[in-house]
Image 1 (spheres, rainbow, N blue to C red):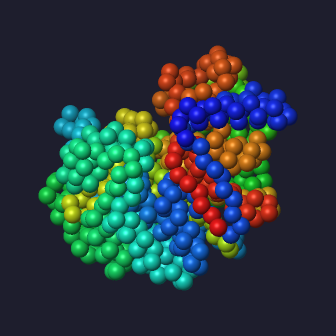
Image 2: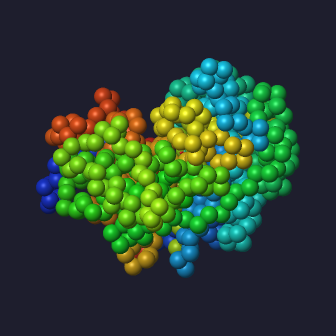
Image 3: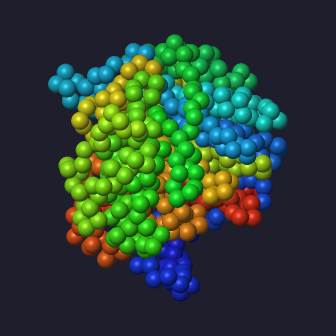
Length: 581
Ligand code: GLY
């Protein structure tokens, strides 16, 4: 559908909604997101991902008797082929799983710093951040040791159904890489937009930029080297990536280009199984990702602060509601800057941060009449007696296993480097470490001492795969997002919209969002996202609304309705497709 007709369609929807909705909301205008997606519902199972081919590959696995874990692995491999801006085998992420018997687990397959990494590796002799090749955001040194295949392998061995073979999870995607798939307009445009990142690297330039003769919408993107890599992994398993020919190719290309990742780094990579964080918001259990993601902690802190306010009685588009949400985010992000990092390398006071008592002290400084400047907000002190980028997909199977998976190569198209002869696009996750203390990273985040670079350490993340239960403990919805630190605020706002404002998942995800991350001291808001009165009143309260609004992340999720149907939702801010059966 053309954008103009989409807008006309949205305006029509808005008029209908205004006529049928009984309460007197200020009525946020709908964000002018360029996409309209159906929210299909299905009796048995559902996959919601950012590419139709990937969702279809996942559903095929489920139909053949695979469970949600099998399907999630197949979807992840497929996105590495059809969604190269973020889908990957050259990056890492987090897989959150909840089983029907109530157990849950989290597989941390985040990248790790190479053994030769050092605290000051991204600073020049003057102590300033290195730019371009050699920096934390682009080129060979920007990559952490990838974890995706090791994480998928762990998930498959421990929690796969046993009914589907590993090779059958890889084969469909290998075939797509071989024969090619049709490019959407968005992708064709994105390759041109990101040419500066990929052009300097011969394999990226050839595969994704077609050596400057950019592929057009509808043309086939073929990835023969990636197909060959997947073929080796299909036959020999994930260990081929870490110990086989692929490992040798990665290490050789790294060595030839001043990169740090060696065969020993790959051989020694290990994913970690972690206990998920479980919080409570107004009687609903919130299951989410623990450190090294900051996502779960910051979300639970924000929700805990908000719990004392009667958000349900407020119009979700009103300045009163936004003020409280923004002030809570600000405080939680100030703590992120100080306390967050890899729990295997630094002492992270997670249980204190997510406690209701701590939220009460943090909340006490919120002035309902005016914004507190970020300069006046410091991280909280634990008293001795105190107790864009990235992609998310969700799978729910017929037995009720829920998988909420977010993985990433950080920036779109990662470091821009495709390892010679492998088709593997590498991450630039080293930028998620504190690379230059006191200075903002790619996402303008200021990060702390606990997140400095150390060999083998995992960089801090904002990825927030989350599963929310009904008050009687059944899975209700699972959601996650892409968009750096905005992932956290997008997931948090989806939770508030569902629980406080009684929206369904479709509305909760599409509803306008705002974002504040403590520093910079400004509120990101969405095109036509805030009604004029809300904007005026937030400004009058002292909030700095950015001059040019922009989207706040993009979410994907599945809701299980009261009659057990699985409803798949893709954010209108981005592309994708939910498919069920
Ligand atoms: N690379 C973005 C994140 O993990 O937060």
